[in-house]
Length: 237
Image (cartoon, rainbow, N blue to C red; front, side, top):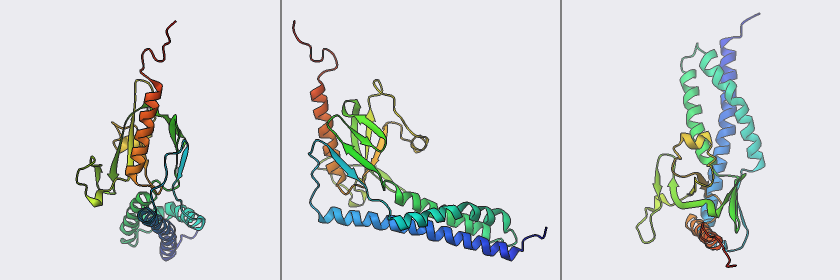
C-alpha cells in the first residue's frame, strides 16, 4: 500500500483544524453574544416579577445553525488533534500549533457556554434545576458569588462596597446532610465544591441579587410553614 504523502496529510490536518476552529470558535462567539445581550436586557428592562407561586426561568441557548456548526467542529476535533500530534511529524510546527489552538479554544468555549440552555423552576415547596429537585426545608445556606475564568469572590453583604467587575453571577446552596445525601458530579468535586452542594449559574435575565433574595424568602417561608422539627403540629388530646 502506498504511504500517504506528507503534504496531503498536512492539508487534511489544516482543513480539519480549520473546521474545528470555525465550528467551536463560532459557537464561542455566539455564546458571548448571547451573554452580552442578556447583560443589556438586564440594564434596560425592569426587574422580573418572581413573587408568583410557581416561577419558571429559562436561560437563552445557541441558535440552531450555531448548534449544527458546533457539532461539525467537535466532529473534526479528534482527527485534527491526532493527525497534528502524531501523523504530521515532518513539520515540527504543526504539533505545538494544534495543541495550543485546541487547548486555548476549549478553555474559552467551556467558559462561554456554561449556564446556557438551563432551566430553573421556583415553587412553594422547592426548586428544580435541570433534572434535580431540592426541597426548601433541606436547604441550610444560600449565597451568591462571582465566578470568572481566572477569579472568584463571594458577594458582599448589604451596605458594603462591591467591585463592579465582581458582580455576582452564581448562587451556591448547601443542604442538610443529616437529612439528604448530596449528589455531586465528578466535575463539581474536581473544582472543589466541598462546603456547598450545588451551584446555579445565573443566565436567566434577572439580577443575581434579586434571585438570591427570592430563594431566601421562599426558604424562610417553607421553614416557617414546616414548624419545628420536634413536636411538629402536635395537637392536644
